[in-house]
Image (cartoon, rainbow, N blue to C red; front, top):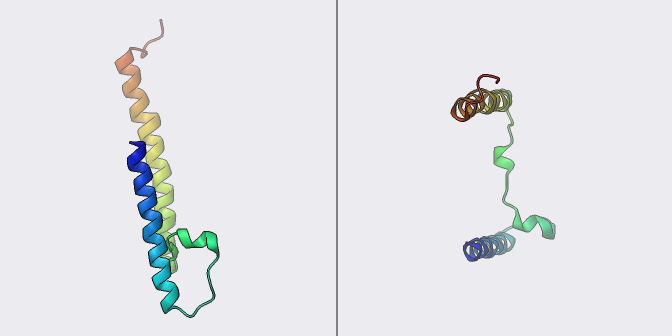
Length: 89
């Protein structure tokens, strides 16, 4: 498993370096910092319009609420009933 993770990481780094080389030969922009060359471009994921910002905020709030419902509500109730900790003894 460690070998597979290592090979996957090395493959990702090599693919990213090749993509950076291709982009560097075609772009006339200022060179990017060395640490930034290995990171993907996440600029397309940043909300720009007011509609996208509203959806982003709604998704963030609903993720927190759903997480609390699942882990505190359903999971703990299921574990307590399965283990038998429902009633104090």
